Length: 150
Image 1 (cartoon, rainbow, N blue to C red):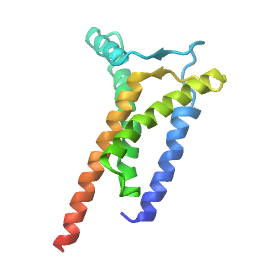
Image 2: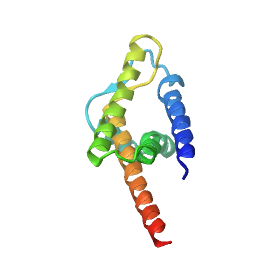
Image 3: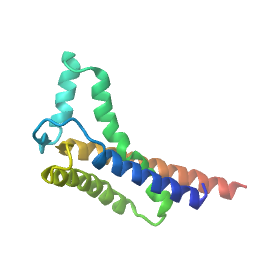
């Protein structure tokens, strides 16, 4: 891909990401739903799936949605910034979801947001980010090999 196309996609994605995680309202429960226990929400979804308590579509939307949320960022960052190391990407993969959840908490405190704060969202966002990163690395590797074959 051309550098300008990647840059435009990157900017559009960042704008959409900000809208999804901070601007588009979520259901307001009158309190802040939060979870700081790793895998609690994911486990609750698994139990609900087994018991049939929640529709599968809701579970997929919440779990897969959190994985897919940062997948494009993990893919686009190495294309945009080629010198990012694996360690740097792992650090970003941890810090960006924590930042997103932290801002959701701050917006709630300011009465400007209704999103929940959940460590499982951080875990799922990290997984999506890292999957995107490794797919980008494979893409770049194949592109590099094709360049030298011709």
